[in-house]
Image (tube, rainbow, N blue to C red):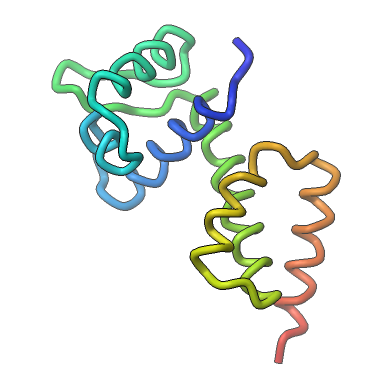
Length: 126
């Protein structure tokens, strides 16, 4: 299945909520993303059918290997791009919003160059 930006956002949100709260249900995703519970249910069904998540009998959502790989890749991009933008003087709210858009569309080559530059700046910051 081709993963679209919306699917990546759902997986990333599941990962972030899992890190913050320990367990994740559809209602948590709906609250975090500002979507309706029915919209989230449809999305979770698609992610489950395509092998990205598991939902247990109590409604708790777990990322499967493929889902976890996508979520961590997107979340790492998000954090790195946002931190680089803030280091360059962009306000935090703007940097986080911009990073959310950029994380999906930037090429791997460009991302790796930005990441390398960010790491250099952090290492040499004094």
